[in-house]
Image 1 (cartoon, rainbow, N blue to C red):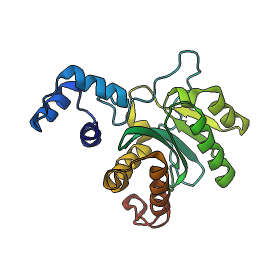
Image 2 (tube, helix red, strand yellow):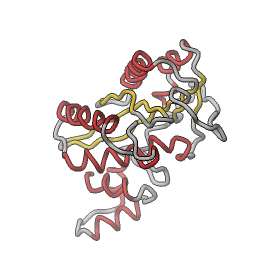
Image 3 (cartoon, rainbow, N blue to C red):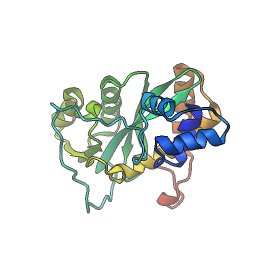
Image 4 (tube, rainbow, N blue to C red):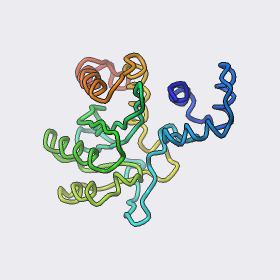
Amino acid sequence: MNLLDEQYTKTPFYGVRNMTTYLRGLQYAVGKDHVRTLLRKMGLVAVFPKPNLSRPHPQNRIYPYLLRDMEVTRPNQVWSADITYIRLAWGFAYLVVIMDWYSRAVLSWRLSNTLDAGFCVEALQEAVSKYGIPDVFNTDQGTQFTSQEFIGVLTTHNISISMDGRGRCLDNIFVERLWRTVKYENVYLKGYQTIPEAKTGLTEYFEFYNNERFHQSLDNKTP
């Protein structure tokens, strides 16, 4: 699973067949069915450069995508959220972040061992309490972000809701880039054993990411 995670981060377009060929090239005696089982357990699917954690609930409302052709010119104009898989020594966890599109700042985050909406709602509430209210909030169509609890926080503050089109991974491109950065600069290097250890390490990393790390897209400024 660790090897699949690393290769997926490099080549998110690899499906079961290519992943099987990759592992066999490393001398692992593995079949396609087993690779498929592992990828499903991790929530990874080919084509999308992100974990397949965005399955919509059939009873939840889906909102239109509002950011096409929008010029983002200031902080708190557009926020977004997304979830990724974080590997541990024995198992895995899920990481959600709230990001400001203009500054690229990670406003809040949570780590969870389940995919219920609670940890996403907590991250959103923290971001609002610390940084105010954005004009637009963009997510994918996952059940966490279409849940009544999450949508309720947004509507209570009169925030316009935007959602990616299905299969349109680039609609939330800034968070997608963040995942690759977090994994290569922190998660893969640290090799976290447990969720508490990961929380401590990610706390230090996001502090560095927001306040010390230079970003080429920001003319080498920090978020």
